[in-house]
Amino acid sequence: MSYMALKHTHLMFVVLSIGLFFLRFACREAGATFIRAKFFKIAPHIIDTCLLASGIGLIIVVGYPLWPINWLTIKLLLVVAYIICGTIAIKASSKSTRWIGAALALVWILGILHLAISKAF
Image (cartoon, rainbow, N blue to C red; front, side, top):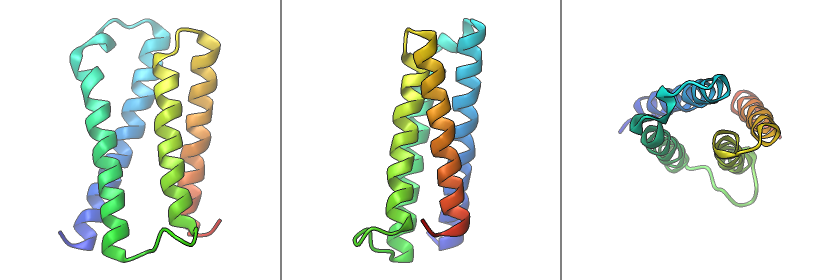
């Protein structure tokens, strides 16, 4: 797969992951019942796996080393932190824990965006 095709695939999964996360969080907070459908339980795992796989593919294609630590290593760690906090925001039973998880997920998203644009940390 060419670099541009892989980059656009990665960006598509970024938009899907973030969009689906905020949709699921908003629907859970609003008490919507359709969010319990099987699609909303399976799709995030597939999308986030594809997001990580396409990110790792970009690392391989571009040839950036992950060690010593550079902006790309930090970005990859922030993606993992976003996925963990997003999971907490969706699955926690306490409303305050869900909101803290969502706020932290948003912070990690903003950090990822900063690193993607500036390529510096």
